[in-house]
Amino acid sequence: MAKNETHDVLIVGGGPAGASCAYWLAKAGWDVLLADKATFPREKTCGDGLTPRAVRQLCDMGLEHELEKYHPIKGLKAWGYGRCLELNWPEHPLFPNYGYVMARKDLDLMVANNAVKQGAQFKQATQALQVLTNKQSGMGGIEVNGVLFKDKNTDTTQEIRARYVVIAQGANSNLARELGCTRDRSSPMGMALRGYFLPDNDQYRSNDNGQYDWIESHLDIQDGGGKAIPGYGWIFPMDDGRLNVGVGLLTVSKRYKGFNTTKLMESFLPSVPPYWGVSKNSACDAPMGGRLQMGLSITPRVGVSHLLIGDSVGAINPFNGEGISYAFETGRMAAEVLNEALSSKSSSPFILHEYEQNLINAYEAYYKIGKAFVNLISRPEIMRVLVANGMHSNKIMEEVLTVMANLLDPIKTGPAEFIYKLLSSATNLIGTPAH
Image (tube, rainbow, N blue to C red; front, side, top):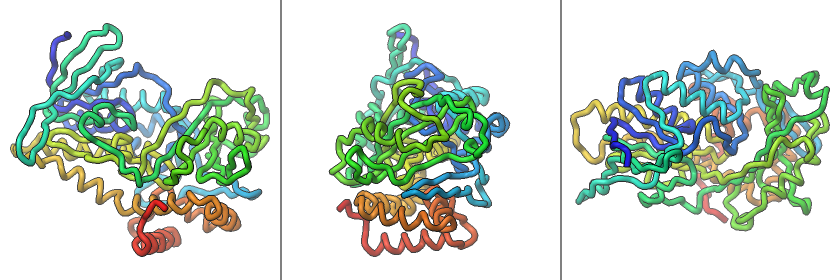
């Protein structure tokens, strides 16, 4: 066994949530260790799109100059039932009106390295085996004071201790399961599959139609039998000439349990507009898939000396399946509470519970409406009516995009805010049962 280590904060998982948390804690001057089982850069299942919420967090971490190397995205080009609309990101007092497309392997490496520049340590190829605890009696529960790791290069184990432990391992966290965390099965579950394609198409490469200016979403995808599916297909153009092409399913319905996203992708590819030049033959590699836990569906999220962040708490937006923004934000929220805890002389076992309240204040009401929305579109006939009617109005769909991307203006009340209030009132009236 390697020599033990002790730190102020140990963060397990080097993705957007963990790296964001490490950055803000290191910036505050704390001794932070970030550990991940992979060796960076590494591939991840993701659409690679950065919404204005994500861009705001990256700029706050001082990475605006790195983003400027990429082509900005104006908004979303939406296709549905024979119609196409170009929907701009809204003007907003807190967020920019543009996004980017950046491969996750590059994004995650950039944000982790940025944390290291602030003083965090980063251990790679370091697999978390189990939590290390001090048993406590009474309401305090179990105190996590470290993690047992295995070095994947040397096959040796090491105990790493810390005053506080942050779990940022994503949706399949073995540490979260060990601590008794479970998913609320009434919450939406997403499934996604993405692949990279390199089109042999001069029209695409020339950008004559402005393809690079938009991320593209198809809202009328169907399975192999021609049945409407509660989800969408996407084509996101990347600066290196590749396309991120994928399909996503958002549902609470048991009828889609075990749904085959590979077959859905096969059904989607022939419907991709020809200007992209996408086909099975233009695939760069085999597609990657995964499950998306949404709506803060994982509990408990806080312990005596540990927190869960990002996908480990199911922080993905149920409206659209986006998780990067919320990974950055929950990592930052956790860092703020941990900074207060580390600076405090209090020994209260509830010192970290402010984080739980901050999550509720930031997301609970919005995610409640998102869950009701997913419950609604899980019925294909309703999904079809909503999309087919909405696609007749660019203005309405821009406001819907504002709601679904969580870009509501906190100051003014415009059409998007009015739509959100209507949805909120309807949700409070009928509840959010998983019918």
